[in-house]
Structures are given as C-alpha cells and as structure tokens.
Image (cartoon, rainbow, N blue to C red):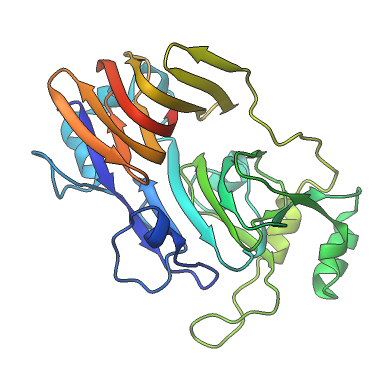
Length: 320
C-alpha cells in the first residue's frame, strides 16, 4: 500500500468545544474535543493507521517500517518528520501565546520551533483572532502590559471569515478567538509560550502556567502586514479548482475543490497529505482505494505517482 488513512490523537484542552465530533466525524469519548492531531509523529500525540495491513501502527511506527524514502527527497534535509497537521475547535478563545524559532527552540526545548498556517474552516459571525501587535512596543512595555493585564490593548484584532488564511511565523504573538474552527499546518513542534490566559484555571483549579521570560525572548514586537488570503492565484483545471494557500521551508499547502475528478502526481520529491474538509470522495492509486469523507486524513508515500480523487469535495493537500 502507498496510501493510508490515519486516525487522530485527541486533546481536550479547556477552551475546546464539540464541533469536531459533530461536524467532522471525529470518534472519541471525550466530552471536549479541542484538537485532533491528524498527521502527527509527535511524542505528545501520534496519529494511528486506521485500516489495511498496517492498521494499529502509530504513524511513527509506519514510517519506521516503510523507511525514510516514503517522505521524499525534499525531506532529506530534516532529521525528523517536518510537519504536524491538526483540526482545532475553539469554543472559547485560546491563550495569548507565541512560538520560538528553530534556533531558540532547539537550544532551550530540544525540539523544532513553530511556524504555522491557519485555514479557517468555519466560524461564528463576528469571530476574530489576535495576530501580532498593533503598534511597535518595547520588551519593557510588553512585560508591563502582561503584568498589569493590558496586553490586549496593543494586539492586532482581525475579523475572520470562512476560507481566510493566516501564515504565522515563529515569534508572532497570536491567539485563536472563540467560535472558530481551523485546519492548522505547522512545524512538528508542541512548544508554546503562554503570556495571557484571561484569568482561567486548569483542571487542577489553579491558573495555567505562563512563560513570560521566554515569550519576551522570542516575540516580534513590531506590526506585521498581511491580507490573510491564499498566497497564490486560483487555477481551474477541468473539474477542479486549486489555490496555493501558503508555502515556506517546511510545507507547501493547497486547497482544491472537486466536482468530478482530479489527479495529483505524488513524485519522489515529497509525501502528500490529503485532509478532506467538505464532502466525500474516492481516492485511488494503483489498486489502492480509500473512501473518504469530511474530516478524514490520508497520507500518501512519496513516489506513489498518480493519485486520483473523484467526488464532490474540498480538500487541503500538503507536501514538503
């Protein structure tokens, strides 16, 4: 087999809701489903092969069994799998937070930093998020505002709409707002520095830990300009329409809407990840067939060749 369907690892963080279970077919006994880690080798939550001869293996075990060649030649520069893909359902706002870059994270945390991309799957009317600062501030002012609870006054508030794209470089202060569902493509990292948490307490009844000194070390305290749209033009090709959402050293991501049939060439340079975000489809590759629906995650080995997707659906495709 050159294609596998993956089951996610689930997270029940206190700010999560129930829409991943209700709208994205996630099967879990958790009352709250804040995140589902759809494509993950991370020690904090690896995805699992859902079917076929490799059923039950964790995704890291699958990669170990198949060998590094399934990642593709573009991944040879990485010493570990480069990305993590997840769904996020924010019933409440996430904490105000920031992620370090590779240099800082590898030195201090022993793992990669975190540059990420958010694709807005859906949102409530008038939803918004925080993206960087709205004016340049000093590290001293940053610390003072964290300590006196006025940090929100200097953060950039951005209204969100279904289909918006946010490319968030390491060092950008940010937070997903309430009522938003997201598909996140990110570096393979779980390092987050929390700087403000709206006075909430965790399951133990105590305020959740803040990481103020580290956040001050890594935060970009000047405004960042962005139009929050896909980075590429929308291209029609027969029965499909595709747009590049974002690209960087660690991943390139596309959104495709299909009414009929489309073929992806998964060559030797990179693996492919297909995340179905609307509708249903049949995915075929040399005798392998997967019937996929909204919320499903499929991994395709590098060098698999022509992968045919047929149906009425929308999917997010990610490669290195």
